[in-house]
Length: 179
Image 1: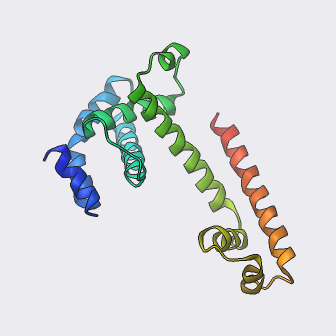
Image 2: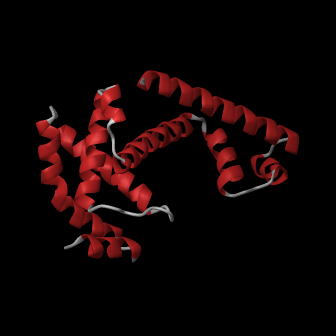
């Protein structure tokens, strides 16, 4: 199946079918990772990460696939592997072409997203609930105070601030450990 048909599957909401077609590319990505010092399990992890990055990008309205899926996954996989290994030299970064810069940026964005997600999951249930009510459900502080049985809107606002500060601290600590 060619890339245009796979892209159509994504656009038509048939993601599972599209991803099953992309798995045909796995042996090539596995060969790449093994050729640059990885193991089969590493290749599997890298390929999954590359697919997650691809999926997130396909959900963006401004994303435009400018290469084949193979080229995209190959490039992203290479960057994911190097990022796992923390082996980017200044010369390598300097010599990236514009497509590679975009792929590298996507890998870094995914890493930030994962750290933020981990920070959110490490918050207590009350903080998670409060932040979801405010950001995902767009509830007012008055509504949040009522739902969560806070004494006032001001208490809800202060709790939101404390939860965000706690999330930022967890995020920064995770970033420091990753470095």
